[in-house]
Length: 398
Image (cartoon, rainbow, N blue to C red; front, side, top):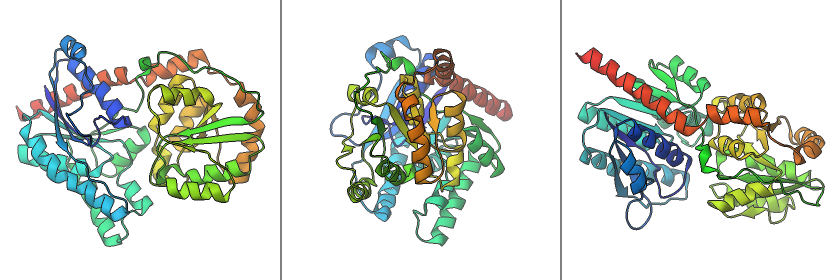
């Protein structure tokens, strides 16, 4: 079986799609599939590969990366959309240079990859499998990123048409799979997000401070989806017991800095970090925030990838989330979940602070969680779905 993957993120930057797909591809290679990845190269120099020679020597499948230089940047919303869709011009010919696959996989949230995949699928007459990592097109309607309603309606209709034309759709949550089925997608499976837990060589250290203030960390993307202004408002009324730190970058950072200054929160922002520095921040924190804004309905069936990383390392999670993400935290005892207005959350969180400071994960439940959401296991599950799908296609054609 030859598989071609179209993705907007495959290194050398570290991202959730890159972590997910480098693990899955290794599983596919172990099962004998050949995999060609088409992705932009946003760095100078040679294309990056996640696989060492030692890894490639012990698998039976062959791997190739077809990358194209793409270093355009934009600041305003309309220029970001333009730059995103400019990527299609580069991605389609790059995909056509690769050998013709048996199955073409397109992983979204980046909508240009969906458009490119649709075009390549039609040009080469190959089945397209669409992996929906985020709840598109619902997020398009809820975010209001497209200011003209006529254009938004056209975009939503186009996305649904491409989803419905796919030979299979992969969702990452059961709730989103149900929505997709209701919208006309007929062949849907769920392969959840997760983490490659064996990458952790140690678990979270419990270094308690003499301070009475609870050390709270948000580490990740600072975008519209996270609703972090509410976190700042909570911290502002909790200065006597909370020590908040925010680590990362994103489109809302300037507004968040301005709001933090207005609230007198001081210097709580820190630049993005990688590797061991990430773990050092996790070790510092008594609790780590996973947050999604409450006013977007699609977040009822969205689970942030960060949740799996934090849980796997043994961090206490403070969830400002609803729906399926809330259910995971509660069902596996991963931490605390709060909802409501700023004052009610601050009051409930303050009451829980002594318990959170001494919190330890339940080893049995954590082991069950890791087994269920281990990306290596999910990769083999994914491959079995693809192999069965290919057999069904061949059966219909014979």
